[in-house]
Image 1 (cartoon, helix red, strand yellow):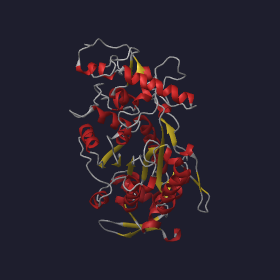
Image 2 (tube, one colour; image 1 turned 90 degrees about the vertical axis):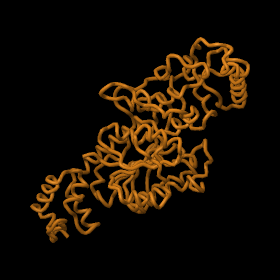
Image 3 (cartoon, one colour; image 1 turned 120 degrees about the vertical axis):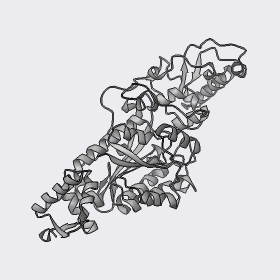
Image 4 (cartoon, one colour; image 1 turned 135 degrees about the vertical axis):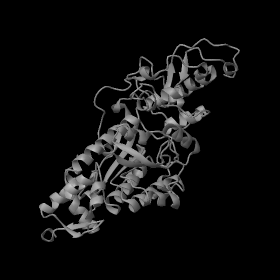
Length: 437
């Protein structure tokens, strides 16, 4: 049986897709309030995500939904160096984590997967991540992978406990992001002590796209080529910054003189930021009288410099050329809804996760579930201790087994004098055997 996920702050569904591509998970509920992103999400998954995690109605909907794992790429702008840096003081987006906390507290998912910018870890000199860890570990009683507990209320971790870089997972993009995975102690108890306390650090095997050259389109439309005036401005800016001792400025990422053929982090900031990843590529033939060409101040640059296309950004994130390829037909089925503005395409990819990184995290979580489910006696005792009893249906849900398998597990635990049948009927209840109490 597949584990069921809910996809909060869903964007265009990169986290969901990273889990689903493993064929071990299925999504049962989504939430996204950005209308453009919601249109793309609905187009890709045939699933309307228009729900708001801050609303009481949605929280009630979650409470009525059977699911196993909460997924959330909660808003990063309050913690991003490219955003407002207000963190939890942000009057709107900064509070989203606390709404997620309420949902976790109400519904007790088996596990949690959170994604955010790298700066989440260092924000406010580490105070933000300290708050998150304390909430998950102490208030909600979840085991966070990568965190150690000294038993006196102190938690040990470092940036390397959570930050992983896209470039190590098969894509040519330098994109460090924070990933948080946690499992429910109320459910799994001491069984969690046997898990590997370290997130995956890389993707094993063949790279999806080995370098920037491999994600380039064979021929880009002329409108992606920069005007001579704009390129000149960027060159002057870079020279000025270099004289000041700064490293800021545009970058030709496929320049053969660069040490690595890797793209810089793509951003969701629209036009500004695209100069971080410029390419040099021979221009296609074009009509000098074309309106697009004539609007370029000073004409088109003579150095064949252009910005990346949305398709290339999609490849840098694993959406195009990987995650949506139909395994039966080999056809790449990713597309935007008809009429989606190009500015929104850039924004949505820039806001998205790198799917192969999430995929590896999803596989790691499944390994954890498999390992945990081998500790049936420990988990059953933990559940009965916290809830007072356990039922056949609860066994089915916890271990993802069918009715007959659940009955077999109960039978074995009764034979071992771990459980005893306390109430016989349609919803028979089992308690800890008296000598075990």
